[in-house]
Length: 427
Image (cartoon, rainbow, N blue to C red; front, side, top):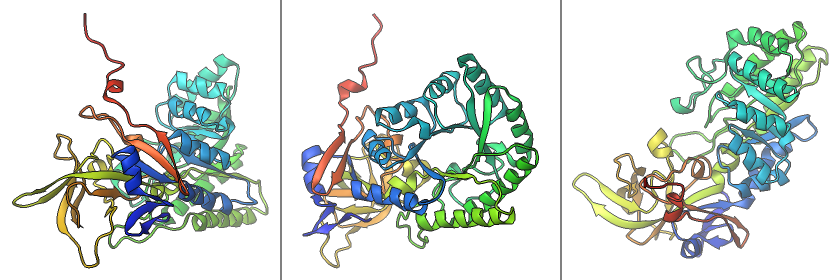
């Protein structure tokens, strides 16, 4: 992981020892590198230089206000899936005119709030949603800009839980129904048909499926143009993966290279059309911006030797990081204190204190650790804190951002009293 390396035998985030962070803020704690966050965003933004393009960060990956604020200052737009996420964008100083609202189940109240803040576009996923949005916009005396999320039925070759572009997915409008759905959208008086969108899945290590989906979108844009429906933008969604260090797995395509290939296809398409209508390109990356910016810092509580397994019991758990239990995700574990050369350690399952057999963070890992040592789960910046819960009445972890030699607490640890502050007993 860039910006996370050993210095004098201790793992550092940029210029700060993770052991010092644990001492100051406790564990478990999410630790992010500001430098890596901005490098990852810039890889997309720089590849878009000179183009009519917008990078909308998919904030479901990590919605901490400090992360959003840093990206907003860099010129990012935001891909949201709830009214709460829109309010986070506003609180972080983001530009609502650069917000794309995705999701299959937008309520009338959420639509109303988004229209009042004049967001860039709604990614609509069904005909009933079109009618609801038309009614809400009409009642406000507004027109809503819409893009249809088209399901291109392209196999992203990823985990089934994060594949979203196949026929069986709950997401999007079927490719075969797209033309008819666009006709409906164009007929509604309070909607402006602005674009086309797709998102075929997450953690893609090969951008070939994304480019295949682009070809299908281009085919549909041409068909719409023949009917007089001309689109302002083409939204590629997100999905580009990161390197979690899985043995035998190829590293993903660099973000800048992927963006360049998208523009090459669009340039070739426009050339075929003899310099046809220009179209804005929108990208919605999430994991590939924040995934390798952060680690989950945790302390070893006990070493337990069993008949068939050895267990490294840590103070982080499935409520702090759900990905291994939810997706069977492989995430690398690394000791904060650098092991002596040739010291591989025993084979452990790394587990948390939650009362579930599914509460594990890693399995069958050779780790030279003992009780009291510190470990990190690498590449934990995406879908860590945003998926965290209070299961077993556990307060969620603290979050810090390291900037050189400075450490900023950007979310303090929850107290137990805060967990039941909204509850009451029957009197």
